[in-house]
Length: 258
Image (cartoon, rainbow, N blue to C red; front, side, top):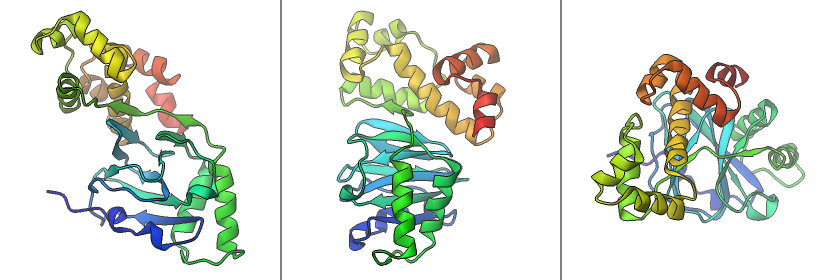
């Protein structure tokens, strides 16, 4: 059983400042239990990746990206074995951010400002240099583009079991008809359940997981050939085509841009 990661023990409510940051190093525990706090939280990996469990979904956060968690929303975070990260806690009144969970791109400048803030005295005074930095930081954050790197895990019993099976083995290439038969329902019933509880087709739902897993593995320097095999694609070209259709660029171009 994993012990709580440092960020779960960090009492962000004890700081009245508009934004405070906590750096989580490789010597920290890897996973936090489900918890929540009044401040909104930006989870930003600096190396490796972070996986967050929030609102019946698994959110994957690679470097140069962060997950935004609004205040008072139950969540847990897990840092990869090779990962480090930074947690930014923000007063709800300090900035206008999305009201729901999302991932945001993080520019190199914003990343450095968050890291710099994390090593300053968090009990900074209004009007101080650190306070001015926080003001600029929050202004930059509000302008970052939003994206989605998540995989829904519905509460509906049959879909929940299928989701867990896919997470355990994302390379499982059973067709929707085969999944339906294995869980004692018709293909039409399964399709309707996925549309109702996930809001997309079964193929797109599974594709979301493949994007999450592919980004995790690519950012951990797993070769594209191996990623393709791990996800059950018949060829590397088929995987690259899927990846490019989903993210607008090939795995090689994506990593070069990051």
